[in-house]
Image 1 (cartoon, rainbow over the protein chains, first blue to last red):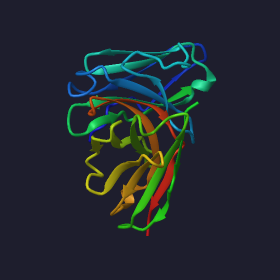
Image 2 (spheres, rainbow over the protein chains, first blue to last red):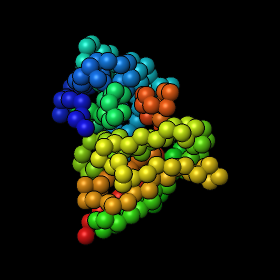
Image 3 (cartoon, rainbow over the protein chains, first blue to last red):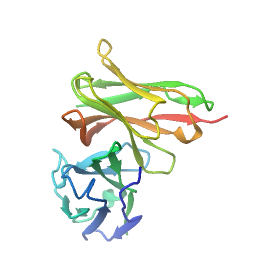
Length: 111
Length: 123
């Protein structure tokens, strides 16, 4: 099952905004609004930060926002903070027997 | 507060079997769709298997179909993953996760995760 494509790494300075892309196909990202994003700190379990393209679960900072255009979804982190340094994964429903697919993951570094 | 706790991980030889369990507090596992997601050492996340809230629908990734089985024991309020014919490439941390699954087959997102159980397949 081929993964969604994310950049391997993105970096920014404290206070800046960064955007992580997530590219799929019309069978997943482009065809449905079931795109979610997860934050994972080293040695910890993933945490849901965005669901259904642009919705934030209760308790998640409004510095995280999501959007989608065509086959590419994006996660934007504004006002970058040291605690945002982590791995980020997108995921999407896929309309094949695969059912669900994750992105390749992006390591965010705060300079 | 929802907490999920996995158990049953360990070292097993190729071709062997293992059963993972997942219990919850603050959540009735028997009511919601649940999934297993794994992460090989230093690698990304991979969806493995899901079961619908009513237990009528189960789904598997191609890489595990026919070898891994997801199930639930309602009397024990526990989610299981029976792992047979294990391969070296099954080595990973296995997370159980509460799942938003629409109509028994549209897997939307995973909103609560356990801390994971490490499964190592090696001779």
